[in-house]
Amino acid sequence: MAENQRPEGAAAPAAPSTNPLQVALQQLDNVAQRIDLSQASYERLRHPKRVITVGIPTEMDDGSLQVFTGYRVHHSLERGPAKGGIRYHPGVTLDEVTALAMWMTWKCSLVDIPYGGAKGGVICDPKRMSVNEVERMTRRLTSELMIILGPDQDIPAPDVNTNAQTMAWIMDTYSMNVGHSVPSVVTGKPLAIGGSRGREEATGRGCVCTIMEAAKHLNLPLEGARVAVQGFGNVGRIAAQILQTEGATVVAVSDSSGGIYNPGGLDVDRVAEHKREAGQVAGFPGSDNVTNSELLELECDVLVPAALENQITRDNAGSVKAKIVAEGANGPTTPEADQVLADRGVLLLPDILANAGGVTVSYFEWVQGLSEFFWSETEVNQRLHEIMCRTFAQVLEVSLREKVDMRLAAYMLAVARVAEASEIRGLYP
Ligand code: NAD
Image 1: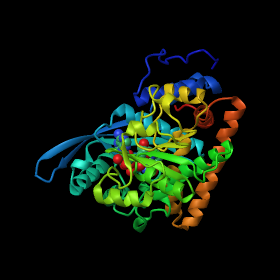
Image 2 (image 1 turned 135 degrees about the vertical axis):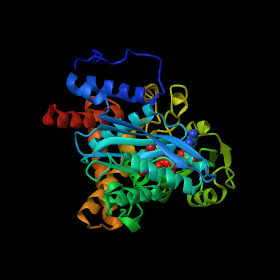
Image 3 (image 1 turned 180 degrees about the horizontal axis):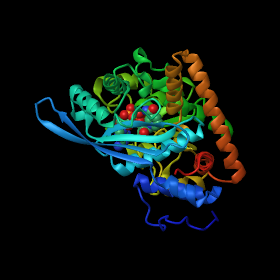
């Protein structure tokens, strides 16, 4: 596709959007022009393969019935079965889930694991639900999705507000329905039912691998580097803990109720303990409270947005002080903000690279389950490290060679691989 020529069907440049699907499509447009993507591949990749909307009737503890809405989107299955997390959040929309499914396609392709991209979401507020209500909702969701789930078809994993227990309920419901245990229908399971060692830490650990490689590239010693992390969940907390172990100074962390800051460094393990007891990081002794938006603009060397989308926008990108931004979350930076950061020389490690450790170890978990042979944690971490470093080097090489930012470089590699698979398979019928 010639440069400057807008792909057929692509939207005209419009006001900056924070709609994740608009962002994802704009990213695809940008890369389509750079890699000479054929019009046919472009059209196919703009559209999800399959979208399912389900009503999830759930009995609440008071005996009333509530029908939650859930989505599962398969974006592309050209390279293998559908892979992607399921999130529970009041703000879930179909556009968000579709964008996340598309990002999963690119992410699996970038780290070169044999999956297509999928994502699921349920509009609900699990913080206002009891454990039993969440379990009943999860089991009903699973039976509504039974027609597309399976270890060769669609393999969910945890995402925002879902965890290993959620995966155990999905695995159990699926297994009950087919009459035998099928551990490989989900990843991110507890160890007791076929989970992988190292899976829980994998996204944070993989993110740190890319930060370490980026720091090496910039000649920035990680020892003493100041780090701010937005989001203190599975990704953010683990990344903060590992970065601290590697010698970095974690100056700020946050969760949905706000953030804490200490320029001299926070003891991340003690913050985690405080959060377990108090339910939030705010109020941690010896720290100042900051808002989530203030955290993004703090004096630091490395910023890890590890919460939700659209946190770094054209309005605040100019105030980001970090030299490295590692996207632990999916889609935390808008395309306009990308441009501002690139112009200011900030090295941005895009989500499909920086948080690909989770799906990589999910893949290891699936492989271990299918072969019924389990690896040591050292082996898992070693293989993860290899894949993350190899992928970082490939993306950096394209970025330097083509003089593009790391996101575009990652997309150029990832989209080209998916398009190649699609073209080799051809069009059915
Ligand atoms: P999580 O539920 O474990 O943690 C999310 C954290 O973000 C929590 O600390 C929560 O309080 C905080 N948060 C929520 N809303 C916020 C807001 N408005 N401002 C600031 N903080 C807020 O979820 P997670 O698994 O850590 O996922 C975080 C991000 O990482 C998501 O974008 C997810 O898609 C992405 N991700 C997760 C994985 C994984 O393996 N868990 C893999 C790849 C990408």
